[in-house]
Every structure is written in C-alpha cells, then in structure tokens.
Length: 398
Image (cartoon, rainbow, N blue to C red; front, side, top):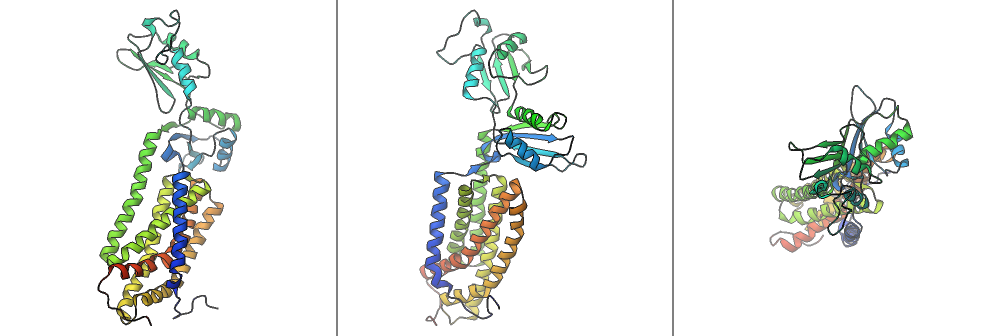
C-alpha cells in the first residue's frame, strides 16, 4: 500500500492555523527555557581546563570518562587524538578552571603578607620591606604573580606559600622563580585543576598507566563568553544570508515564511538542549548550522515547486497551488527526512560524548525542520502573498 498516492492533493492549508499554534507554543516555550534556565554551556563557552594525555597502556575513552566521573570531575569531554605512534592519545576537557576558591586565595594573600585592604598582619612576620606591592592570580588558578619593591629571597617566598593551608605547589624545583630581569617579581606555580585531575587518574588507573600530561591549558570565562557570542552571531549571519538568497532566487513574499520557520527550528533545538541539560558547545553550534542548511534545502524544494506550479497552473489560487506543491513534494520530504534520521539515530544510540550531542541536535532538528517545511513555511508564504503582494493574478478557489 502506497503511503502517498501520486496525484493526490492534501489540504495542508487547512492545518495551517493549528500547526502555526503548535509551532508558536514550541518556540515560546523554548525561548522561555533558554532565558530562564539557560543552556548547559560546555568548556568552549564557559571556560575550563584542557589536558592532553598519551597513555602507556590501553585505555578506552569510556574507561577514562568513568574514571574522571568517579574521582569527582563531573562529565568531562573526551576527544581521541589521531596519533600513529600512540593509539591511546586523548584530549580531556574539564569544566573546572581554577583550583583555588575565594577562601584559598584570601589565605594565600595573608600568607604572602598582602591581605585585603583594611586588614592588619603582625609586623614581626610581615615587616614592611618584605611585604608585596601586588599579588595577582591567573584565571586558571595555576600561577600567582607577586611583585615586591626589592628582590626577595625565594626561600622566604616558598616558606610563606607552604605555610598556607590547602595550597600545594606544582612539583618541580622551579615552581617558585623570578619572573623579571630586575628580580622584583616572582612567579609561584601552583597545582592546577589539570594537575589534580592527573593525580586523581593515577590513583584510579595506576601510576604506571597515567604518564605526565603532554599539555595542560585553561580557557578563561571571558574568552569562552567571547567565543559564545561569536557563535551566536554566526547563526544570525547564516539566517540573514538565507534571506538574501531567497530574495534573489524567488521574491520577497517567500522570505517571511522561510525565516520564521528557520528561527522556529533553531529555537526548538535550543530548547531541547536546555530541557535535556545536554552540554552546549562548539559542536552544538555546528549542529545548529547543519540544521539550518538542511531545513533551508527542504524548504527551497517546496518553494521551487510552488514557483513552477504558479506558471503551470495559472488559473488556480495561490492557496490551491501551495496545497498541490506541498502534496507533490510530501513523499520526497518524508523519505529524505526518514533516511537522515536513520543515519544519525545510530550515533545517538551508540555514540558517546560530543558525537551523541551532535546526533541529538540533528534528530530534533530534522523532525522540526520537516514539520516546519510542510506546515509552517508554505502556509506563511501564502499568508505573505495575500498580505504584501498587490499584483498577483489568481482566480477563485477551485
């Protein structure tokens, strides 16, 4: 039995008001969720620590993820690095940025004889000539820069740091060193969040399995916020360029339906990420742009058929032409969307980490894009034609 009979015309326009209501409710609910709850930003957008490891023994990504979760580091992002010399080479992204909280920073300031304004310290332990003029903490919590009036003895600085409870120096002889030519500035290297993560892994997987990290870097929240803003702009620019493309290829009456439908698709996918509390990262932006491209291609096919039928069926009303055009492309739309869903569903079920989140965005995006192509974009185009087009020769409804 054929699902869509050739030549059969479905009254899609009759479902337009109901579909528009459903789409409006989904869009508003998604927008409210994004504003009130907010996406669960990943390391790319919120900041965090990046650790590169090359294991000496076989370690899978799932084992590494379980070990990280069991040691109190949440759900890190694990990326396998292509390396011909080592098959167990991974990039681990942790959400945590700094290993120091506000109380620990205050403790270290007091130990270095640089308390907050208004606080006093004993003069026998903190004489004026050994008091710093400035203390700055790196956003990653792995470095403290202390500036003095004169070159201080490093042993004295080391003793002050080690007297602070809960503060640990990074392993190595040069964890306290002069940082300027004149010697009035000292760098104190502390154990970063990445160092603590590697130590936790060694306790879990064994010291002989986890070597010294190849690289430990951090991304501050300011850089993450800038990257997030640029990602949002990229989606906005994509939609603007889509509008210009539609204006050139078709006419202005096709723009409102497509743009509103694209915004609907993006908002619903964002809302699905917020509700499911999945991590929103750069790969999620890539998935959104992919959804925009897929949705646009789906709608352009329907629009092409509408434009063609406007010439062939000049005696029909625009509403009837929309019904005919959507009915003619309905089989193709459903089959294409079903094929894409079958492909990405495999990654959603058996994928891990970022790949699963990307597949989740694609599954939701394909479903809402198919819905909006049939029930949102085309009816809105018919409405825009009646509302804004002054000269369109149409006959009475057949």
